[in-house]
Amino acid sequence: MPYHKINADDLKYLKSLVEPDRFLSGKEINEDYSHDELGGIFHYPDVLMLVLSTEEVSHIMKYAYEKNIPVVVRGSGTGLVGASVAIEGGIMIDTSLMTKVIELDEANLTLTLQPGMLLMELQSYVQDKGFFYPPDPGEKSATIGGNISTNAGGMRAVKYGVTRDYVRGLTVVLTTGEIIHIGGKVVKNSSGYALKDLMIGSEGTLGIITEAILKILPLPKYSLSMLIPFASMEAAIECVPKIVGSQAQPTAIEYMARETLLFSEDYLGKKFPDTKSPAYLLLTFDGNSEEYVRGEYKETAEFCLKEGSLDVFLVDTDERKSSVWGARGSFLEAIKGSTSEMDECDVVVPRSHVAEFIEYTHDVEKELGVRIPSFGHAGDGNLHVYICRDKLSDEEWKKTLASAFDKFYSKAEELGGQISGEHGIGYAKKGFLKHMLGDTTISLMRGIKGVFDPKNLLNPGKIIS
Image (cartoon, rainbow, N blue to C red; front, side, top):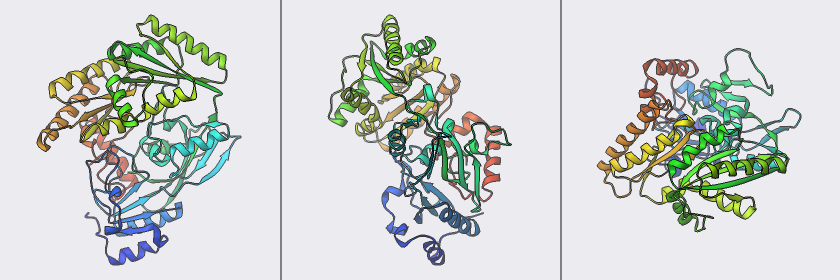
């Protein structure tokens, strides 16, 4: 069924649903709303509506369902796969003004909030009150709704898990405008199908999240990091499963190449503590006892030196932490700033195969004659590999991208991995998902989509065709 093209009557009615300054259409819509952070996929919505409540979203969806108008939800627009781009036009619902904390429940260790709060604001809010929200994706200006919609992971996943592990309940507006509440504050739940977990990671294709109940933890009293240089990337990565196997419990295990560190130095205009070595691991430990944390650090440092690391640098002062983690947080923007255009491969492979996959990216780099820097979460096997365009022509770039992605995703499949660890599928990666999962699994996904969204109005063209 073709989508309804928004006309003057639709504009008049939709404008009545929100305050005038929260409604834009046509040329009033800023160019930022035509793409996400990575770019490469562009399309404007016909209407942009900034919402404040579940009820406003419900009213919009009721009208969209009646008139057969496609709807896309957007938070900060920090995604990298085109998931928040309105490729069919229609209505874009911006939730970035929905930033209220509804309840901090200290007895049940939960925080109930709206989806537009930024991750960095959420983390700061709970930390000021002595609590801790563990999911820690590199992009701190993403909204919590976006994190839930992609099941974001981040640097602390190796110890604490990913966003899905911290979502207790959701309020969701369905495509019909009906409002449902799934999950809750309970720790255990065996009451029928896990609709909450199905909604997490669905990238706005099944429903619109308007409230979330999140699990929080007591704030660890101590933390420190260690920067460990190695003579090669292979040596660094091969040490990771050994560290995990030694029964150490680091909060994060990140890997980085010297080339990426130098990009970051140029981008930030600040010096990294050490850039002499070809490769580094960055580990963090936390806990409630300084003795415990320093004991973990000491044992792991001695272990890494025995396994061939060149040195171990302690990162325990505020200045050193700011330097090291500031550089790590800027990697994406630093690589982006080093080239004319880029695209990302967000694969995840078993930890034991991380070194093999990284070595393979170096082979592909030589074969295709392009720069392919990388960094990522070595502790959980989630790798961020970037193909840089530099001076390639349009035709060369398109051909190179297709070849690189085909090679990387085939290798990930061979190693027992998946095509996305935390950034999602969106529009850009859906063809690769279909190839990896096969017709039967994609058919099941289409069936789920059809139950939740029979008119295909919610974020059409994303994840599955």
